[in-house]
Every structure is written in structure tokens, then in C-alpha cells.
Image 1 (cartoon, each protein chain N blue to C red):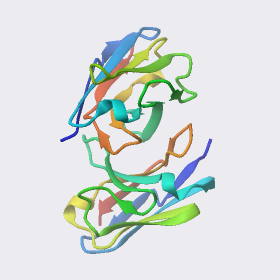
Image 2 (image 1 turned 30 degrees about the horizontal axis):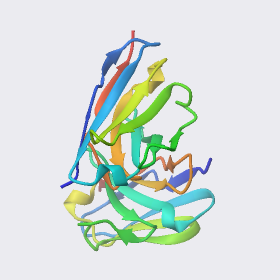
Image 3 (image 1 turned 135 degrees about the vertical axis):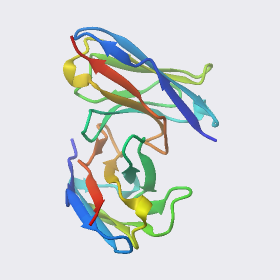
Image 4 (image 1 turned 45 degrees about the horizontal axis):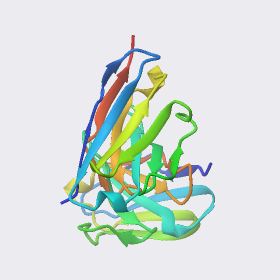
Length: 108
Length: 114
């Protein structure tokens, strides 16, 4: 099983600041199968990024994904008030699919 | 518009059974793999099961293998999760998702407790 480790656990930032979230996999994965999700309290997750860097439909361009191999990054260029949430990375290349434990982006 | 509507959750005793359903609309259901993901209260996301578009292939997490079965009825645009021998640790919100997670339902809560 491929383990995904996200860091930091919590990121305290102010609106307008840049957020950089990390996702490290326990072994090299095909970047075609690395996704990022946003989840707000009481809501279902929402797909942000698939294939490591492709934005899903309707996702603002302040969200960007990068990385390959074992190291992947989600960057939020300038935080908007609605961006404060929990973010998960996911490997869906082969069973078992796995999620990282999440990074909470909170208002400083 | 893609819509996924889960149902069937509720309170069940340890060792009991439950069947979840996910009614899909707004896309060609029979052309897409479907997935169940769960989230225990206050915890992160856990992949549970995935089934191919035809229903011919399915995968389950080790934590549910032998107890849960994913299936689908393409004539009814409906995805299912049959859960047996339920444990307290199966308590979670269960989400159905299109493909790996392009679209998600609102979730249905399963509580396993005596």
C-alpha cells in the first residue's frame, strides 16, 4: 500500500497570503493519478486538481498543482476567505487507493 | 448536472447489515467507474471500494474485504454497497463518487452501536 504523508498538519495564514501544501508518497507514483481535494465542514470533498497539475472544471487559477515521483505540492497563490478548509491528496493509480491525512488551512 | 444521491444509512448494531444506495443522474452512468469513500467522525477520508463501468471488476480496501460488496445496476443508474458484519469502527459518513472523485454525493451516515 502506498502511504501519503501531508505536511504541515495545520497551516495558519492570512487572506491574501500564499499557501504551499506538501504531499509525499512512500514510493514513486505515476503523477497521472495524483489528485487534490478541498473539504469544508459539513460538506463533501471537492476535486481541485487531478493528474498532479490539471485543474478540475470551475476551479480558480489561484490553485495549482505540481510535482512528480514522490513529492507533490498544492499551491494557493493568494488565499481568499473561502479557501480556508481541509485539503487532501489522493493516489488513485492502483488498488488500494489512498488519501493523505489532510492539511487544515486556517485563518491566522 | 451530475447528481449523486446516497441513501440507506442509519443506526445498526454491531454484527448487523446495511445496504447503501447511490442514485446517479446527469451523466452516462454505465460509462464510468464508481467509488465509495468513507469518513469517520472528525477523521480523514478512507477509500472503501471501486467498481468498473460494467461491474465486471471491483476492488475493496483490506479493512472491509470479505464484509462489504460493491455492485451496480446500470439499468437503474444506481450504485450499491452491501455491508455485513458491521463493526463500531465502520461508523462514518459514506460518500459515493464518480470515477476516482470527480463528483461526490452529499453522503449518508452509518452508525454502528449497541
